[in-house]
Length: 119
Image (cartoon, rainbow, N blue to C red; front, side, top):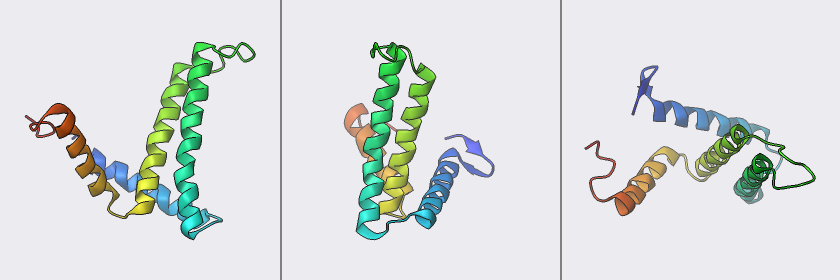
């Protein structure tokens, strides 16, 4: 991983995710189990925005035409990733480790045993 400001890019990423989670937790109007469920449902909303952007980028809706660009699709996909990371952080303060372990399992299953070992 690339180095940035004394840490890895992943460290900076998860530091930002943690800061976003803290900000959301501080400002949320619904807590507890309902707040947790709403945080998870936010993913569906973001995925819907990806679909809307793709439809707009290809001009599939004749009423709206080309209402989005592929850069809009990129931004919406990034929103999905960030929302998922914040949702994971909501479930566990060990989100970076949970994600890294899961990524390693998926890589090994898909790419073989040497995947992710810098080889």
